[in-house]
Length: 126
Image 1 (cartoon, helix red, strand yellow):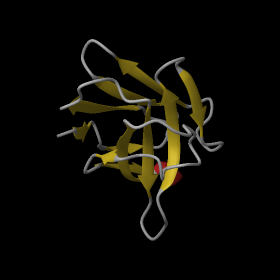
Image 2 (image 1 turned 180 degrees about the vertical axis):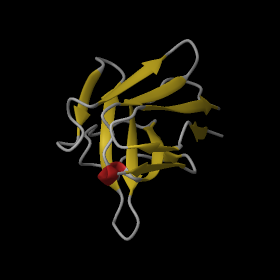
Image 3 (image 1 turned 30 degrees about the vertical axis):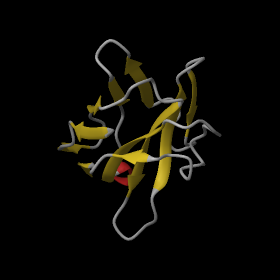
């Protein structure tokens, strides 16, 4: 059974940085697509960043481009999200997700993701 576990969420001031980690286990082969999604209070879940593992192509939400970086450590089966220049609007629950069956890999498309973590909370104060 595939399991994803996020960590690294914290409360920081605007302008600060955080690195989120997602530890994966239970895979028999690499997922096609991995990504980070977030849900702010009172808002629907939205995409933050995705990475297509076969060619390392990444996609980002416009709101985080230039500030966030998604990366994957294949030896450790770990996914990261480096978040810099954080803003109060980055506040939310952050989830990592993976698609092991193949399909469209893009930050705007979460329906293909078939494994989800339970989330880690990020709070940015002004």
